[in-house]
Image (cartoon, rainbow, N blue to C red; front, side, top):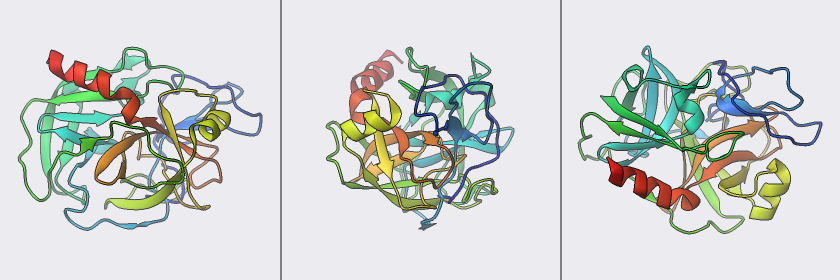
Length: 267
């Protein structure tokens, strides 16, 4: 993960009121600031941390459009990928399934297994940085191997101060280029109360803190936060800039398990 944010610009779909000194962005956006009092940046890359070894994160995938990375995701079943809702919107419209390719089974963007997407299914109540989660149904199942393996969903809240692992191909520092190899870093879980105070969002969100110049960045959107081999978070937004002292916001997976399971059953 990078120390700063990526440069891909994505339309901000919602603005959340925070303290006047703070600006939030989705991790896939880059550094676009709209004419709002407090926009967020969508999308970022892992800042700081280390380079992932082959097979270290077999559930991690990259989402490609026109052969370029725009977000991350996690394999939760042989035909299902969990990502962020803001990753599958463009200008307020859902991105066509035919425009998205899932890259799995690799730490290098130049290799791996590619799968076409059959359906794009964002949360029905996504907006204003809330319910920022989506499912992708693949046209063809992914093989099971040492480099491709689904990750279990966390069913219960994560205790404050737990250390999670975040990963992605996002920018390695603010304004820097994306990473061609998968990177990872550690982050500490804030309590629900601290997360609410920092973001103004009361449910469906888990917040992480990292030392300065560490954390998620542009391009990491939709990517995983993991604890004890369970998926606990989906990268949603950063505050101010990549690697700042402000917490990073991730969708809290345990709050969305019923929605995930119900949506998968429908298809």
